[in-house]
Length: 428
Ligand code: ATP
Ligand code: MG
Image (cartoon, rainbow, N blue to C red; front, side, top):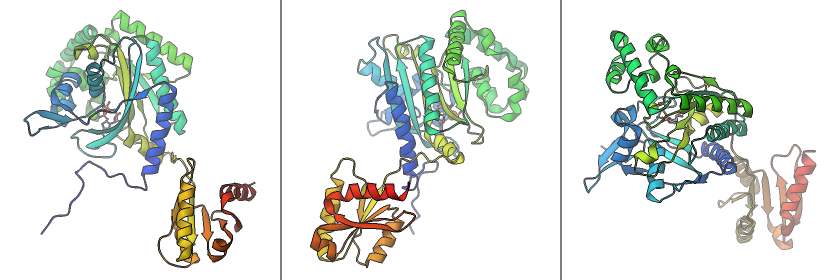
């Protein structure tokens, strides 16, 4: 007996019913990225395991327990990328892209993390992310964050709130880390096992715990902003002023830390309460030392990644359909001699660069049946080619979604003009 083959747990198929919404959302986001000057970079899904260990951090959830790591046939340790930034930095160094000028890059595609699958949390999920290299100024942070705000405007989303924080310099974080360690050691028994483990390795991560039982303890913990160095404080204050000036509303969340070690100074998240526990749709921050740490020339940078599953879920929950509408014409013809004409008419129509989708029926069946199938296929226009039309070189244009029955027989050369005119007459 053979067992039924199924997709890997936590990895989803994207079916045709859903793909127009995905594509619509992606296209809108890409249009915004283009307006801000971001250029696309496409990278391998597999990278050397060491890349992620050295960037994301050895004692993060991702590297400790979420990576899909395996030895290939040569015995090299490879990992399916759990996020995009490490690869972008690797490629930037490898191809000499960091030359001191501003470099704006975006990427898109699947990421892999072995997490417990649930709503908004999958083992293969998709991100669109952007990274900007070459400026340490808070103006860049403001521009990048304002771009993410523009994403939501473009999509018509209003339920997302921006939280920001500063993680300070490496030295400031080290001092804070000690304070935090002392505090949580004093409350060791109240911590869950995950946090007890993090206490020694990465105590800042306790602040990021999703365990509601720890909320009060975390709420009373020493606060990061008090430990900020002067430079980071000034940077953060300037960022707040700039966001105010741009009209981007935000909340300062002093407990906001990120799950990856490479962040310093600015961090931010866009969150919603509409998605249950997985409410962060987009998250990012500064990583001014990462390029240098991987062997590149010192290059300050900031970036973010947006989770497409969560974004699409939020759009659906808000009743927004981002699909880009496409008109569909359906060629209906009498089986036999007319079919050749129908095929060549469809072929000719599709050769126009701004052509609609042109479908046709390859089955037999009378006009009525074909029109029914056209309707089912979502067509808005039927182009009817029968014996009469064949004899006169014409076609009958029928609107399928019009309020009243509308059709007209015209020369084949004026199909588009006829569709436009009939449609205009039909919806004044
Ligand atoms: P979380 O705290 O929810 O685990 P994270 O801090 O691990 O998120 P990032 O690494 O910053 O997330 O990734 C950026 C975005 O990618 C998240 O805000 C989220 O929208 C999305 N994302 C992350 N992990 C997953 C996942 N397993 N499934 C679906 N989307 C995800
Ligand atoms: Mg995570």
